[in-house]
Length: 317
Ligand code: TXA
Ligand code: MG
Image 1 (cartoon, rainbow, N blue to C red):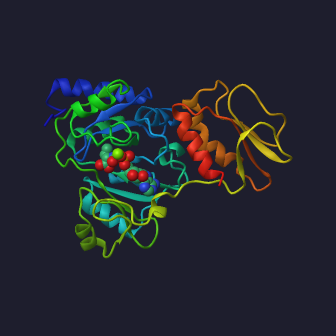
Image 2 (image 1 turned 180 degrees about the horizontal axis):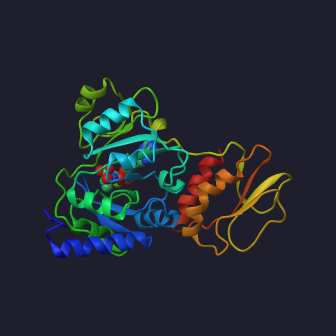
Image 3 (image 1 turned 180 degrees about the vertical axis):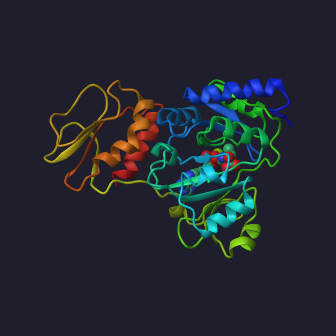
């Protein structure tokens, strides 16, 4: 294993990684489970680049990685179950889903607009060094293109994402090689969202019975539980070409549809990365009871535009 303290090459790489994260770039890093594709979770543009790099046609909420419990409590509301599981299993392959704090600095896009965040403290020593040095929460999915298997070596990352990742921290093969276990502790009844590095039996010994949302193959038993998403409380209309009375306008590009009681522009320059970064903040801003609805102008269905259209479509139902 690489020791970034003793190995000058590893420390130099670590410094480069810290600079890259501060500049809003993507860094692939090792964890004990699989390699992650990381960006500054508080930088919405950087988070949008993760989705662009993965090539996923939808926004999936990302896991937020931090160096310690002290950092985690700044982001989400812990309850007794969560405290117990965190104290016993962190650092380690357990991800806990909890409500965001009101002043949580993590970009809404990182959690795909949800009120909750999935959070974990990885155990790999290189990862921990990286997380404490950057000192910002790191949003990271597994470092592979959408639809392929999670990478357990730096070579896997290079093969899958070599052209889009700015830096790959190499710590050899992952010790566990299987993703983290995800448990949702938002409600009173704990729910297992994904089987992984820590077994459900181990967790049940610590907090009692856990409801299974997935079967042994990690296939969702109750798909509804996994497809929770943010939707506006007023109607949302896509591909609008004109405004109806009382509607707010969510614009894209240099054009407008005329005067509206409230207007936000996802990206005046027509930049899909910028539009993705703004999407959830602007949906929330326009979701006002005094407005009749939200008219959204057409957004191209290429690149990140596919995920933006997917999320708007879900919100428009
Ligand atoms: O081991 C791991 O967990 C690796 C390493 C890099 O940490 N990460 C990983 O991330 O597997 P990813 O994006 O491939 O899987 C994250 C899963 C997704 O299925 C996502 O839906 C779920 O976590 N998730 C994230 N935030 C959530 C939330 N707020 N509520 C429910 N599920 C959430
Ligand atoms: Mg994955």
